[in-house]
Length: 272
Length: 269
Image 1 (cartoon, rainbow over the protein chains, first blue to last red):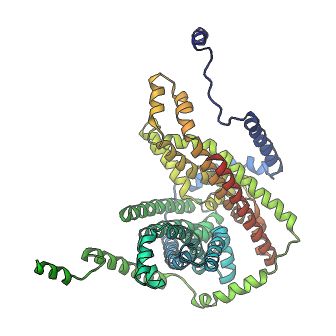
Image 2 (cartoon, rainbow over the protein chains, first blue to last red; image 1 turned 90 degrees about the vertical axis):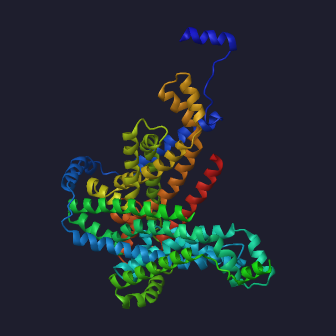
Image 3 (cartoon, chains in turn yellow, blue; image 1 turned 180 degrees about the vertical axis):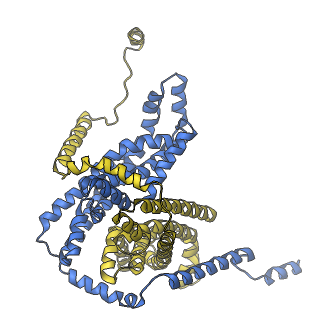
């Protein structure tokens, strides 16, 4: 090895070295020091309960022992839970997508006047800033336990996502068609319906399918705080140490999400 | 010639042909049936629905004005939330990178490892953070460790999937060039693959950190640490004005996180 290196050194006069990822050595080592300091700070301030954690591994063994094999005995409960989750996701997607169309028009700078644009953007930012579970808690507190809170939560969640992307899509449309319609004297609504919507339609359908899929996932968790659906069943199973039933629910959730992901991917491919 | 023109003017313009129209009506019909089924079957207590706007208004009234006397407790809980998000994102990297390497079609050693990688990614993404948290709280007890693990287990699927896609899109030629010189597997990864996916790696990590901050705000609702513990506590005590303060604090945190990530992204890319 050494002899080879000296030989090549003799010809070229230098040894190849990998160029560092960050050129400035101060930043390179500084980042390392900062990360180490952060890790020390974070671990020393976080309250870890080491004794409980030490007991964790045997407890994990017990939980998994209790969970395998999964129990599908209470199929009735499983079915009603998933049915409700699906209904929540479906209704919320529909409501959310319907509401997101006007909001997206409001929030697109090229078709909305400035004050309307600001209102639209604010609506989108507000509906995006909270995690759906937090929204679900507030709705449960306001309208009581059950699927209504779930539907309201996921509707808001859908608006945040669909309206945002749809507004961006409207901002990027081909303006020529709108001008063509304007030149023949078409009104604002006509321009929207025939000049703008056909251009965003494929995207809208794709987004709706994606959102249905995403709402189906989210509907499993809003139930944990009491907003209906399979999440409530799962929470109860955990609370009663019914780990085999909980495991069955988890497996079903994974299976359903795989199916819905495949389905929505298929629909989106067909449309595009 | 005249005949031909007459034929053309006779035709009525329509946007869709017959088959397209049939598909459209079929989709409408299925949607309507599904709505009717869902609305009639779901267990909704309708008086509560009509009362909802009033109730929401009254709740908003009880939250106003936000009350700031507990700001130091809120601040330290927020710090805990950020720690959970940051530590879990950092730790996830060590698991997600090998998994993404075996889950990418062009780098995986064989079919079996490819499917193992894909299985890990899919199951990680299918289970929500809250559900992971539920599981880890049952195992390790309530606290930050359960939260960190929950966020980690969820992030592996996300980072791994995007990293896998980045690896699949690399330029093959540097890899082939190195293989031709007889470089070892590890060297090929280090010098031909890693430099190509480095920018994608940082972009994905930053994106996930931003998401994890939001996710970490709710972990406390099932007892896994962070601001959620305080939120749940205040809701249980009907301290709605404190709840409003916490919600405001979350919004501020999320906006700060978004601003920071957009600055970082510009620096990196």
